[in-house]
Length: 140
Image (cartoon, rainbow, N blue to C red; front, side, top):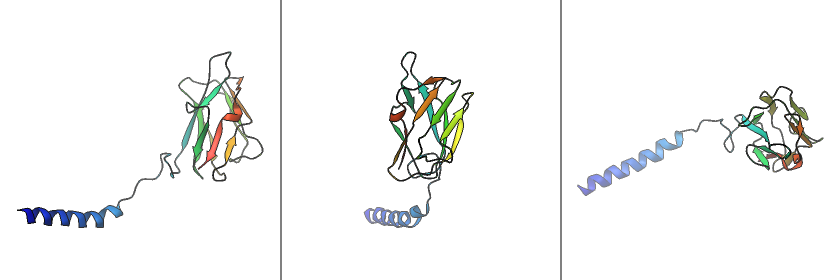
């Protein structure tokens, strides 16, 4: 009986080696190395604090080359937002503007590897963020 178990184990190992490499992962969804859409949720602290966050953090968000980026409101709906990059920009436009707070696509990210693209200005709900230089995108 033991030799049957061993034969079955060897057959299973051979089949695994032959068939598992043929399995492919689906592309997209924003994981590492994937080029799906990345959603960046913007938020601002309650007045008078003008500290802003993106995706719940006050740091940079990692983006893959060619990945589409869409800015949107966080847990609370936004009445307006405007993201401004300085002269070195990873998108076709330096300004991503949503005068009504609706989700807005910035397009495909095109940056240099390991380079941070911080915002020169960020306005949310018509309030100027106090920390735009600590927020931005970094090419992975």
